Length: 324
Image 1 (cartoon, one colour):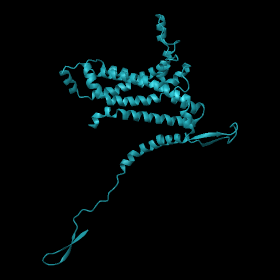
Image 2: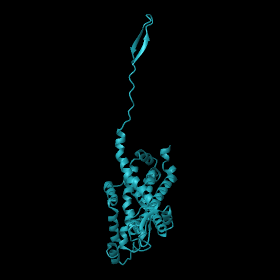
Image 3: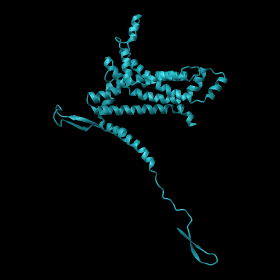
């Protein structure tokens, strides 16, 4: 581009080339979109579409004409909220929800309490063989739930349990974890055994991030190790405790493997012991995928509401340091 200038004395006009650099056309970078495209693709096809299809099936049902044996005797029709009404008024579903809530009241406090205790012990300066202890405590988490349920199931059976045999030798009668009043605790024991290691690692990692100057200042002030743990370590790891509590609530509502594996070993575990077992029964035993879909949606919404409500309840306490 050029600009027109005039000579002051001669009165002539001449064109001067414009010195301003040419404006570059803004280009939208495409590389970030290429990086996130696989994640978006996986999310849409593995999460979003199955969720939407489940919600669609929960609003449908099958209309049977006659005995339902001939061609065209079964047709899929619109059901509206009928499946949801059936789920929310089903006694088996309500009983399974109450049973799982009781299961969670046992599992979550015991599991997190033991995880915090082990984490505090491993973080103490007087502990020896710290790596070996961490490995031993964490190892049950690496065992699949099906394998751990089979292991504990055989330990629970009086006919093959070495504990029952040893107790009989000394004339002691042990309680039976498969008994009607104790089966919930027997299943909870398996969940606690497998979950303590993971939560312990989370809490131990949070403890190791605390500056050691705080401990040294507390010791100079005369605090004991117990006081340091109670007044410094535990308040600082409360956000991690909140996070592990949310994980515990989610896994509690989704309990399935432990009661399903133990069910052939006892008559005290029904096919609707937990909501997920009821969904499995409806979908694959009764071939009623529509009711199973409605129950799945109700369980997913309940899980979200409980987790989000719990986080909102403890938000000020757990994340007060981040909000300052």
